[in-house]
Image (cartoon, rainbow, N blue to C red; front, side):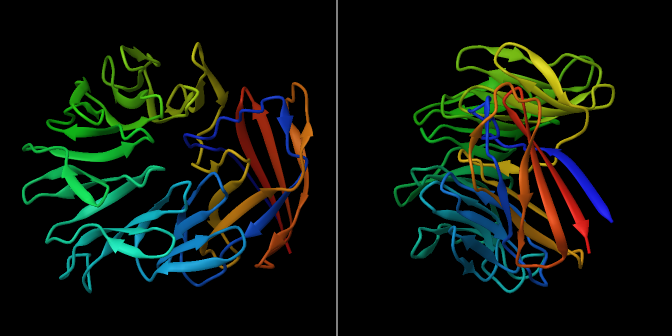
Length: 355
């Protein structure tokens, strides 16, 4: 039985800088093989991987270590520091506990928050600065941890959530009020509203921000703020969602309805590069690919594709990157990984042949 999956790698670092080049082969490593459901992996530029599943786990390229016995939604920076949401009681799902923020610096774990309210969804940059959204007793606000101190960036009567931080310490988030209170940007000194509407913003190291927001008549559209002005990248009768931006200013998102598929804006034009919706796989700057998928027992497991060779492919329309080996499970007797460079974006196709 053969199963075939074709997805777009959706992350701020998916834009492949070597458009005319490719890796000659990949080795597929199954990092986990447990009775837990393991998911939400994150990978840094050094190939370190974190994920959740019966705790928080870290793979350093050679060994896998459990760095916490519990926790959700870990994030890792290029220094190997990890943040996550953890419970400080026996039960945070309606019990006596609440959600707090934890930081692992490679040696020690520090609980950054300790209060009677929920603090969730932390993000960390390469300077060790952490942002999250937390309950203040009446609504959610944005908090920034920097140099052993915590600053509350927002203080209003509305929900502020889903913050993102870049390596310059710029923070963006959305404010929920009457459906949407807009997109806000903190530049290290002042806070500015850059849009009157929008959800789930993303920011790159140049301070460029993308988000999805209601267009005309009522569909979700994609918007880009370049530090000075805002450009509406989409204008159609269907929904456009979940934009991501890299440091080159490339933006990807997925459309639904008449424009279903994955779209790429290259700084000048927008094109549909795949007529289906991407699934959020990630690739780092060295071509390492991370994802989670089902094993033979239908548990969620973590998989890593490691490049084992490199070759130049001029104007490649498609390339097959050798045969690949599966390590650690034995659920399949062969895997083939195919990466297709299209307009600077990597498409991933995995063929699994079951025993």
